[in-house]
Length: 421
Ligand code: GDP
Ligand code: IMO
Ligand code: MG
Image 1 (cartoon, helix red, strand yellow):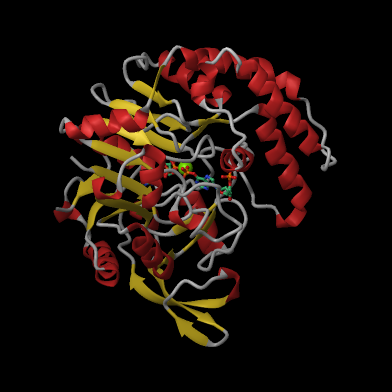
Image 2 (cartoon, helix red, strand yellow):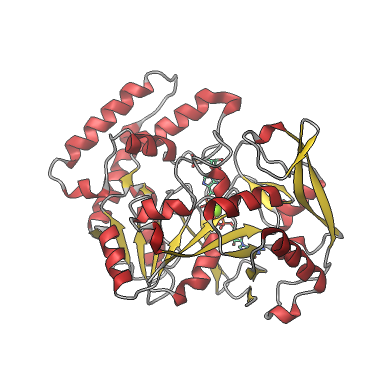
């Protein structure tokens, strides 16, 4: 069998969590492949909203296994809180959650380093979620990191202290007050909890399951424009959020990739700093934020909002080899008379449809205007009921990208979803 990869095509928060939850019954295993508690994946059903940070979004379905892959970075404190919240809901995680030995650990001192680095950057800060993501991946690539597999070693505390002391030495370059010891108690409690879970060689497990004919859905975090290599660097996260990240983050071969399911919002949002060509820092942006409830799932920060950007979307499709598009939050556009879509950029007076090296250089995107549908679409239950203006909006995107939009999500709830073919 192949692994289908679901990922974000914009700056994150495209609605990946909701879609994974909807698709999970069609799979045997859901596996997160990168990122960490910087992610906030929201699911809604029975009028209750759930936000997951580390645990895959397949966890609410009764029959599927959920794997936290080697590419993920885990903060035991956040993990413990998530487990406790799910346990309160009566979800039996023990039989459903497996954790890779090779996933790296976020230490309290990684979080402090993240905060110190951001504070030192001042107005040039990345706008990090301050979850310790950057410093943890730095230690991974710098070959200093602690992994989940280390927690069963008798020398774990020694390794922990060694890395902590290294971080303390690094922190002397910043003028930043901190108290690691206060955070250590809950961190070690989180470690104790992780020890109770099945810690596995997830790359071997997943490949064995594929050979047995099991279906695997790989769940991405963040979005393509936040990718460490291809995003709007340096305003990116520290992992490969793209399809290739599923290979390295789960230990699956490229030939094992099946469908690449690209999720995008019917408009754009971005949280944190960095260029955003179609940003609407005006009433339009305010309306999108208000109607779309665009506030970060992890940090609560207001998200910057703007029109759909086809130049960026096509770039993301190319990098990922997307085979199907899933569009979310079209319901948020329901009140607009006119909806704009960026089709090209202007750089130094010249028009381009290619994403430039530095998005800062774009003077103005060129937009086409489409007529809005001006009606409530949130209770539509079949493709045939989609108003013609929204069908036109979808068809325009399909024509421009050459891909089918096979899912249209029209509200946060599990049930608010239309399958188009
Ligand atoms: P993720 O990080 O990609 O999983 O997305 P987030 O959960 O951070 O942000 C998406 C937000 O939009 C969440 O609050 C979802 O509940 C909500 N959402 C998802 N799909 C839709 C949709 O089609 N319409 C509306 N109105 N909200 C949606
Ligand atoms: P999900 O999975 C949106 C952004 C941060 C910041 C930059 C770097 O929910 O889509 P980091 O904490 O990784 O060092 O932050 O990336 N960012 C996200 N934005 N959704 C996310 O995840 C994000 N994860 C990180 O806001 O600009
Ligand atoms: Mg999110």
